[in-house]
Image 1 (tube, rainbow, N blue to C red):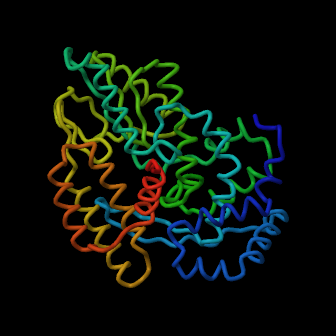
Image 2: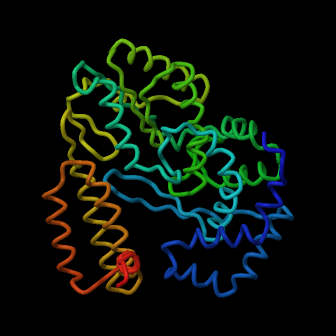
Image 3: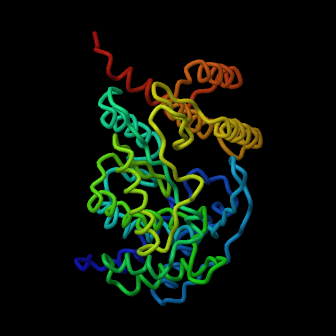
Length: 365
């Protein structure tokens, strides 16, 4: 338990709130609500600080909207000042929990992400199949309506193991209570930074059970989507039943019946937007459509001056790095050629910096 420093004092400090503001505004500097908040930044941050210190802080109602990317989901958007508070909280308690997370938990963590998860999957499939010389099986599973079913009391009890400060716990309860779910005392909104962070804390209990009790060697989790690889199918059947019992009795959750199955390695299986086969991987068509739609949306925003070329370049760079994990050479070549033809004379800040560093590294004389 973290009793070595005053977490609440650190959370409410002006420096922490300023850092939280900078993180919350990232990639949103042109948004009117960010511009309005920044016009009187010091006053707004000091007001937030006073509300937190006096325990008068109350989150504003969430704004809900529906997206299809590719499946239909309800996203809940917090007011910008509340997002600053979310970052302020995660700045302080994030490092405490992150060092407890297992290595193979890949969602919403610095240095992790889908790219690293897919690369780790490649390592595990080689080990589990002994370089494709023995038969191998994969338990691919996710949790039924995970964010809707996170139990607040269980989550708080898990957090209390590491956080004793009642003021920090008060703020966490405030954030959780701001979301109205179908079931009282359950659920977190999709779209909140704190939801992503709490999701990892909640399922870290499952990670420990799988790694330390079941002693599964080849396990990867990304939010509520996870895989276990084994050469013994019966072992995976045992794991699946054990996990179902653990989720039901300890975390009040259930595996998704249709999406939690055991596959023979080599048959088509979806994992983090990829269709995985024995010797190759393909991008799922819905994910490719999502990428093209997002790029089109960014281009429209660029034309209106809402984003700059750096934003579009960063998006393309991220997607290209992800797509390289599948057999997409020709696809990437065509998409990048089309992209470059639309922005023939543009150069990003990253490219300028890379060229500058290259010039600096040239030997003189």
